[in-house]
Length: 104
Image 1 (cartoon, rainbow, N blue to C red):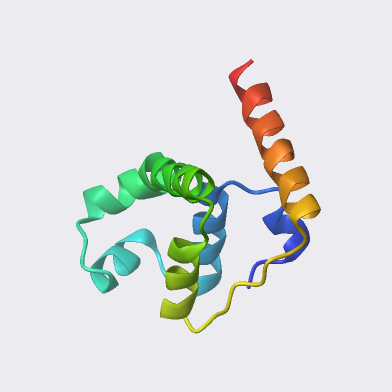
Image 2 (image 1 turned 90 degrees about the horizontal axis):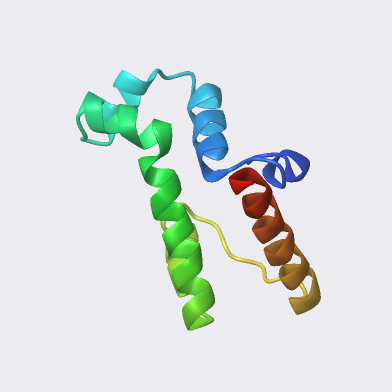
């Protein structure tokens, strides 16, 4: 599990890189294990999956549903814990502010 303080600061790509680093496996080994080409793995680690993750978050906000997140968590033996609505809204606004600053 990623340290909560680090989790608050990293992008999805950052989380992928942390997971790969802590696994002790290189990109080629991970690609082979998850049955994707090394080229696609390289693109995934450089941003393709970051865009997918952002779209998934947008989808969950648009539908007001954590069902996709629950499914992902279930696949790896985890549960989703919903924090207060106020805290979730603050995190959402902070994420939007970070994105706006990156675009500026």
